[in-house]
Image (cartoon, rainbow, N blue to C red):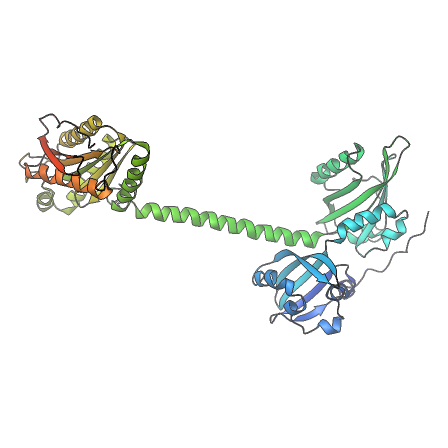
Length: 465
């Protein structure tokens, strides 16, 4: 068995920073490098002294986008560097600090090369010299025993003599992470993979759990081809994990805020289309629905009907009973109209003042006439007293019309439909109120008005063709 390098003294924070296997640097508030280690200098192809005081985005222009994004929050990003015809991909973690920003660079292009190197290394001493803060372990899969270099104790805060060696391979792993190990080992034992990689937690001396990344490779097999021995290294990646988790938390918070914003915008849009007194859709909603259904009518050939409804002698009602009573009357009429209409197919809106409008979707001429009579009769049945009305109660006048898309004449527009229904309503009011006016739109666009009262049958339903 080859000899290994004897245990080294635990490095000081300054020494660990200087000799760390990843590139580290600090920049001040002006974006200039104030501290750097040798690994970072090698990445930049400069000396540490030459780097100090230089602008980080001038030394590494590829950092400009992620560095700008890290103004107020930690950012992780992969950047590509091409220096001296050599292309590398670095994972950079940028974290704001009281004096500026702290940056850590991990060369992730070497991962594949490192795994390949594991197959070429026959001796454990080559792994022990790779970098500080890592340890080597040799797993005998036949006896289910593992040997670990002493660096694993130092990484977890123990001295070499402070705790006994644990020769069971996975006994020191967090119980919740055993399934990760089991999944990776299952593929190796089944012969599906010769490489091992897993991220899991180990208990530190201070009681915390440290995140560990382990990578290894099967280096020996039995005579029948079963894996017999695996050589691997482990690295403490707790800080990297913390940065990733912080970034994930920021992303989750952003998604929550975006979700809340979408809901708020929907709520605002809904409120903008609702009449605050009657809680019916308002004129804005009416215009949007009518335009939508008018376009759909021309494509799918349903019948579209429009009813304009006016409370008779409502000004007198307000004068006699006061505006609070008038508001209550409007609410009761609105609730009644909405109750009579088909809930999934008709849209009842407050058009303005004491006037309402109802859009009947996918209807037919007979149903449109029946709906007008039903609305008028139901309001009469409310028997809301009105001494200022000849009928002695609240009544409504209705003007309605409908269209089918047999012809696409120039006059066939939503505005023309409103005009026809409005003229029918005016005729119903002129006839003494408590009447129903029907506006038939002829093929040439002309409008023919027929008026009936609640005691008469509705006019014949003629469709414009």
